Length: 113
Image (cartoon, rainbow, N blue to C red):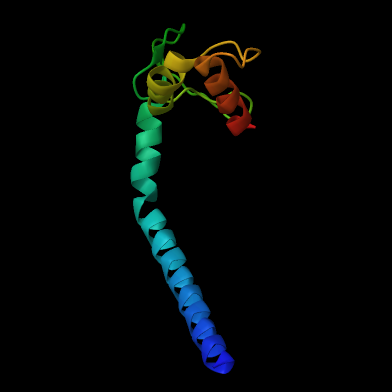
């Protein structure tokens, strides 16, 4: 009886591993397929993106070229929308655990760490 249970357990584990590998492969293929779409969405969502911002120079208007993403990055509209709609309505002082909004803000902060 024990051998039968262990055999069943082994087959379930093997199947789970096989599915896990297949799921990871499918996820990677999907990621690769959608990479360009994702990058385009990010480029179009960047505030002051180089495609729509011109700087006045002595040589005439020139497109903005931002190259300091490592230090500060540019805000992305879909992230700003999330913050505006989901975080700020519940934002409060993190030193107070007496209110629901204070607790939620503390949870936001802890989750971000």
